Length: 184
Image 1: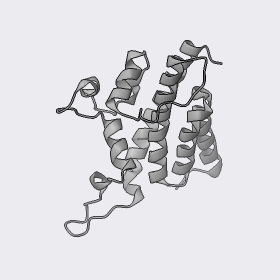
Image 2: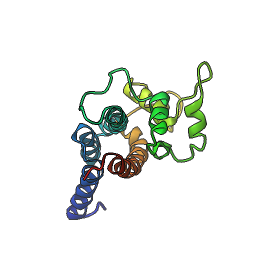
Image 3: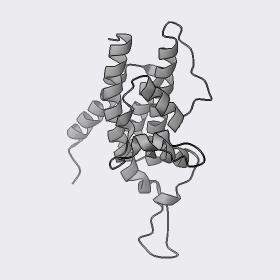
Image 4: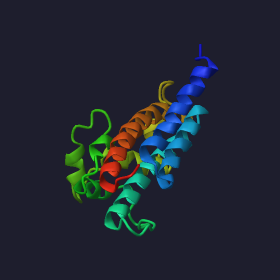
């Protein structure tokens, strides 16, 4: 039985306001809020895409603000979510360890890997796959050969993991931004 509507609304409001309160940057907190809204309606593809975009935006914008805190400007369109971007953020003291997936104990080893043996951290690998339409690892194969299928619900577990990572990231990044930029 689903929870009473009042409980559902309360949790939705908590999740939506969590990102607003911790990130305090309209240029990126709306990605997370829209992801929460999408999850409320079982819209897993837009939810996951929006969470990835939120993480990417927080990294890009924060790095741009570190580079020039006095002149607001758009980050370079060439700086997308990648091992390199996350390494740059780490070099500036951002709490990038919060972007590691559960069980990804080799997160920093992957970040430092280089071509031709480069291995993307999970958040980068999954972002690239999902945002480029590669959902093959999420295809449901439970019904046996010839009965494989993909529905957006196949991304439910990823969405839940990514939402939890995003919350931990927002909390740690919010603290970093407050200390770095003396916000709020």
